[in-house]
Image 1 (cartoon, rainbow, N blue to C red):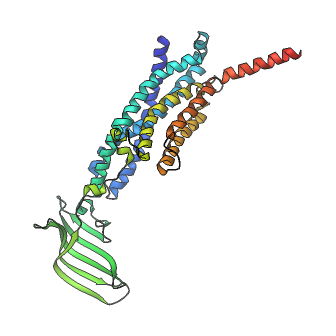
Image 2: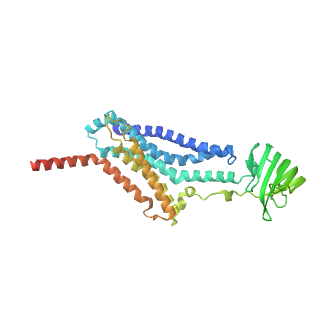
Image 3: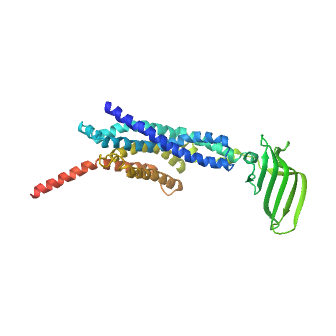
Length: 372
């Protein structure tokens, strides 16, 4: 029991440290990406932290298996380099017993990853997608930034604004450039107005972009034939916003209850993926035990690179097979289930590699004694 607590504490503490660092790196990269979208006007600044909070479970479910895998390599690698594993082995602990001890914290991590992948993460993806849909379909005035050229709505117009009111309903110093074709010829127009505002038709509830006290120049570039129109009020129709039109049907956002019993290949492979994440925790724990075996001369980082490559091969194979199932080039059954036994077999082979070497040496000695 003392050895079990000691090894479990080493693994779990190291897992928390490694996973925290990996999570910080991933979240920083994603936050920079969202921050760039906010700077370009695609996202509102006030929703950035909400999006990151909802995406956090999805990050954790991918980081925890890798953090747990690296933690076993580091923790057991240190025990090997400090000769503590030699002492444990001399006391009668076999590699199989070490695997059994390792599987206990692995089950804990697998339960956490399973709860995230099956329930928490899909809810976070749905909430994130709702926010992004609202951002994609929000009012054009909400996206306008002063002192920058920006497209207005889904039209082919470009707008420049000197200032925006606090309620974002009125603009000052407006420049609008539009392009299009009329009677087979390119026709472009430029509007300059003192102010503009978003107005709602009282009867039809339609939105309009009204410009006040300005001039409209229309013609074909390179020709002197153009029209100049001065106006007190110039209105443009704005398409209504529809949050549902901005929603994207992501498989990761489907509730797990909708995936169970479904016969659609995409839904079935999505369920397999969510179940594969906690299974992967147990498999990588089984792989990490023989991969952590080292000696003081080589150091505990000797097998770190090959172990990481093996993990990335495992995760990449799962992702590739999922894509193949979704595209129809790989059958839903066995689907992802064929991958896990392959890596379990690799772990079993590495775990018993020392016994294979001893058996081969024994057979050589026996053959040598028979010839003598």
